[in-house]
Structure formats: C-alpha cells, structure tokens
Image (cartoon, rainbow, N blue to C red; front, side, top):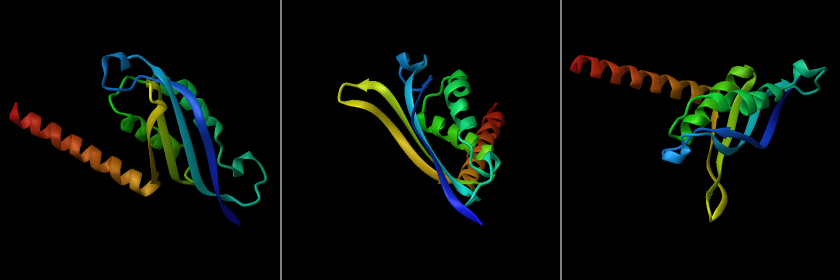
Length: 143
C-alpha cells in the first residue's frame, strides 16, 4: 500500500548568479527550500522505496551554482522543478522557495515561492518552448 510522502529541504544555502543588476552577475548567497510530494510505499523496506532527497541536495549545493547567470529568480525556480521531477517519477508535486540574502536592509532575505505539479510543469515548459520556436521563426522571416 502506498502513502503520500513529503520530503522537505529548508533553507539550503547555495550561491547563484541571478538578477538584473550589474552586481548580480557573480554568484551571490541564496537560500532554497524545496518540498517534494509523491506516492511511495507506506511502510518502506529500504531507501529504494523512499523519495530520496540526497541527489537533490547535492545538485542544489554543488552543480546548480556552476550554471550560467540568468536574470530572473523565476527561471531558477523552473530549473529546480525540472531537476526535481526528473529525479523520480513518483514525485507528483514540487514547491520551491528561492531567497536572495542580504539584498535589503529591511529584510533578512527576499524571494519568491511557487508550487506546481508534474502535469502543469510539463505543459508550461512545452508552451514556453513553442513560444521560443515561434519567436525564432518570426526573427528568421524578417531577416
């Protein structure tokens, strides 16, 4: 029998190059919180029966910081969704909070949060891909 399990990673510290300002071109300290929700055995026999958080933690802390700069936190959140849904087909919903540290004298951190399910995320990425192809075709036809 399966149960609904949630795995929470809270305020994992990482460094990312993200933002629209000149001083945000270099990696800056960030906190990321992630919740994975999915179906897995209610009484697991071993790690293979569980939603394993270690690969996601390793990626967030070690691999993700080596990616190229991007202007929007929203892009970074979508990267987490891509990775998290790719980890395990049993993951059905992912929540991500991404917070810039030390950007305001008024707050300890400022960030964004979003929750999506596997189907919504797949459709959103397909729609974005189609818009990008359409934009490229329009540019090509002008040239």
